[in-house]
Amino acid sequence: MSRQVQVLAPGLLTTVQDLGRDGWRHLGVARAGALDPDAARLGNRLVGNDAGAAVLELTLHGPTLCFDAPVRIALIGRSVAARFDGVALPMGRPIELPAGTLSLGAVRYGARAWLAIGGGIAVPQVLGSRSTDLRGGFGGHEGRALRAGDTFALGAAASPAIDAPRIPAWWADPGFDENRDAPVRYLPSADPAASALARQSWQVSAASNRQGLRLRGVALKGERRGGLSEPVAPGTLQLPPDGQPIVLLADAQTVGGYPRLGHVIAADLPRLAQLPPHASLRFQACSVEEAQACAIETRVRLQRLYLALERPLARFLAASAGVA
Amino acid sequence: MNRRAPDVLALADDAWLLRYGDGDSEIDDALNARVHADAARLRAAAPAWLRDLVPAYASLAVFFDTAAIDAVPARDWLLACLDADEATDARVATAREIEIPVVYGGEHGPDLDSAAAELGLTPQTLAERHAAGRYTVAMIGFAPGFPYLSGLDPALALPRLATPRTQVAAGSVAIGGAQTGIYPRASPGGWRILGRTPLTLFDPQRDPPTALLPGDRVRFVAIDAAQFARLSQLAPA
Image (cartoon, rainbow over all chains, first blue to last red; front, top):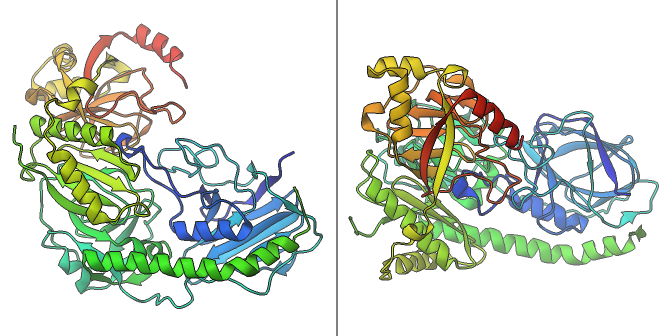
């Protein structure tokens, strides 16, 4: 019998995501996937999953879930209030729980967190991925966000034999020294409005979603090009006729006709996922070389973190009196 | 045909955008044919780091795996691959001819009458001239499986609705500006709906998931409401 999870309360927008869907963009299929793929990877590492296992992405407020068997979980991303049968649970580490109810509350100091569960969320793969395509209505759990009453299965994994939460004293925080107020770096396009993006502060509109972050500020005047649609990607900065830029995120459509101001570099994309409605942000232009240096720095940081994690994680997982 | 090398622009840390022509806003069928030919050539070479190739009207995005290759060598490889002297146009070998059955007008084509009046045609003539066209899938986008078809008779170009409909039925065949297209699933939309096909244009459980591929040649074949009903029952839900 596979282990089941019942959704008692869905949270604000909880979706099944993995590292996204590749190879179908020419047919209009978005990449989707966790808005912070490195967070999903780390969560999976902490619970002993493959990097590409499906996790839950939480938006602003998390779900309440009931497990019918013991599970190993990890919460990554911005701080989320978590309780298991009255016990407060911390972020950034593997936690073993007996069967019971996990209540996730508000996400603090940001907008999103990810819940990895040992064995992964066992929804079927669609076009090579378990990610939810919200606009296309497929993938994930029935192509939509979780609702109260939903039930989904977990993949096979060692089930810890415990009757109370088991929590290690150490934790992993990949963003411990991150400057959350630092400007978001972007590679400007040749559009005359591209450099103007960095000259003011922008506010995140409440109409933002996984497809795009809509910004509000003093309207930019772009090149009013006729608009033959061209491919776009997560990170693309678009300038619609109202002069209020949109930064495309993981659920970005595959082509778009608005003038392009450039793109947010990959290293800074996960930070965009943490901006709640009405948050303000600034942009800073950078070069291809800087973008590449940032990508390498991110890779090195994560490698260092994974190296440091190796021993305590192995010790924790080994001590788990798990039964397959 | 203009053989000038495309401009190469950074689209994302993991993608280059090849832009053909001079950025004109007019749809140029010859440029689009070149985009599909180049896409086919790159797809045939398919190095392991190549993730996605997205053709559009006059541009082509190439997504690569940054864990496997850096941006600059990826760009150099692309340009070398496209520069290689290829005697055959790869598109000729890959272009398919697809027939799309359409019931024009009535409940399935709510804009046929008003569109015909706007163009000074009878609804019957508009339907016939739309079905007589020879189209090419210039690109797929907007929604999974939505084909933008080039080749529309310029005399049939129609402005989009001032206020888009909140719900367009799946399979609706429509004109938007100088293009025609088909809504793969029920969605909001502002194009003028002439008719509807019973075919399922996008099904994520199929491989490939779309009935049409970029570069395909398309013909519309008029059917009646009874045939539509029959074919709809055959199509997967």
